[in-house]
Length: 116
Image 1 (tube, one colour):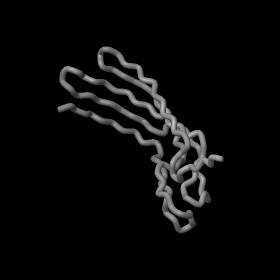
Image 2 (tube, one colour):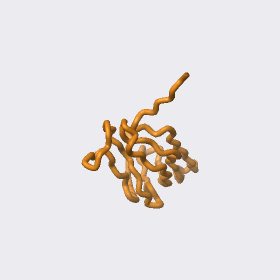
Image 3 (tube, helix red, strand yellow):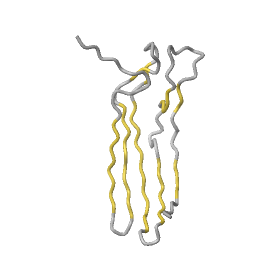
Image 4 (spheres, helix red, strand yellow):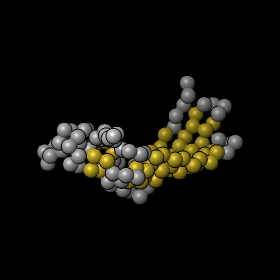
């Protein structure tokens, strides 16, 4: 008889999918989802379960290949979902435990990377 044991703090499934449109002139745009379809436990005693979540993100930008620079704007968590992004696994979660860390609200990032 085999018993399946799941590690606390590790989701059973985490699915990431990207859809990116790129043009030859360097312009690109795309969407991305990060989906955790099942809940999982944050502690070894299985007392605190984290809710499933799905985040929608986007990114658009321009890459100038000859001069090695690019510019982009990125938005994450477009629907402003509340979710737990990081877990410090504990033996047993209690009211005094500080093991759950919330994810960002709806950050917008702008960047201008340059390849040396």
